[in-house]
Structure formats: C-alpha cells, structure tokens
Length: 135
Image (cartoon, rainbow, N blue to C red):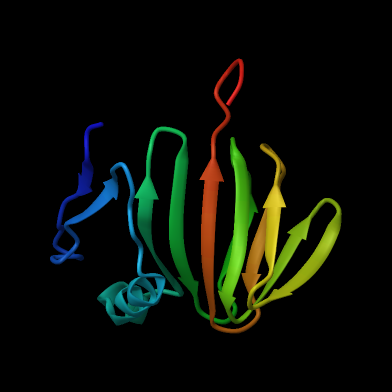
C-alpha cells in the first residue's frame, strides 16, 4: 500500500502528515486545537482539517463559530456527522434536529441538508462513497 501524505502549505506550515496508510492514528483533540490556533479561524466563521483520506472514505474535523452555516449540502456518498463539542442544528427534508455533544447523525447518499452551529461547535464528518456494483 502506498502511504499518502498531506504536504505543508503556507497556511499550514506544519501540515505534513499521513492521510492514508495501513493505519492512521488521529489525535482529535490536537487537531481541534490546531485548527482553532490557525489564522483562518480568526478570520473566518469556520476551519477544518482532513485527518484521513482514502479512495472512498474521508474523515474531517470541522470547527464552526456560533451562527456559521453549511447550507444546502449534499454528499454523493454516505455521511456521518458527530458533534464533539457544542450544539448544532441539522435541517433536512424530514425536519430539524438539534444535536449536542456525543450525538451522531447518518445520511444516505444524495440527501440534502443544512448544518448550523447554535454555539461554537466541533464536528467530526465522515464521508463514504459507494462504488458502482458494491462497496
């Protein structure tokens, strides 16, 4: 298996890290601290970092400031959204759900939804793309 790495950038000079390998360890608390310490967090209502990425699965830590929204979102694959900190409102065609720490919601592919941070929020987002003809 080829090990995939994310290279450092101007915005993330210490950003060189493994994204895909036979196993990838992720210190979620350290990633949350990192994205909250970055310049983007001070200038924007959100910031995120990819902690794992392979052909059909991606895991991202996302931080949203109170009032930040991801509107009219649709994902081609399955999506799980876990609230690590804060309160988040999820809106879908089925209605609204206010979620708090340690709650998770899962969406099938193609389900439109919006995410709004009711307080400063930390989310763990996982997408899983289903390949044609199976998993």
